[in-house]
Image: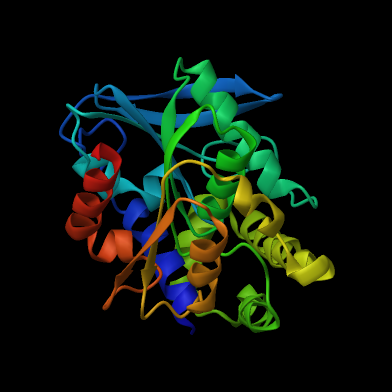
Length: 283
């Protein structure tokens, strides 16, 4: 079983055995609900009351609850208002069924931007992990007047042949162990999970047909806000050339490497990650 499966399914497994939503596991008031955005109802969580609004953008098949509990709990509630959302077709933002047209990252970016506007935030920062980092890069490029600062980790702006091999190696969920399949099947149902996962592999793979395998390479120079790229030096999912490309192509970017960090560094080293992000956002 690859590390890719282990980090993604471990986050879902943690969520499956948590206290029910009525329990205040963030130790502060958490507002939850759905808002109609671009023709779909998006589920979100909101906590804190600070002047600096932050949107958390999850990874593939992820949700705010599975992917960002340490950030919802740990970011300074007096300085930040933190919003996490489930992209359409993921988590509690169902229906609709999740699909992966050629513009699915752009669609998620538009959804996230519009959700924040609907919630009353016209100026906010973005924190994006993995697929959510790609979404955040696109959102920052599309809406520079709205995005204050940007933090991305475990993300890539194009799909290389090396990446394609990784994605295809985990396509067939029937080859996963029952222990690894079960948390995803409990969240989504076996059929929806199987079909959506395979569709995700196809969706991310289709970018290899673009020049240079681009997902959003051409948009990187348009990201004008201060940007922090975080990279775990032991990340098996994202080779080190990806953060270097982001650093080179985004005009106002800096790179922070975590020597022991893997793909889920914000979960494994949550306190260190939260301190790093807070310091950057408050500069």
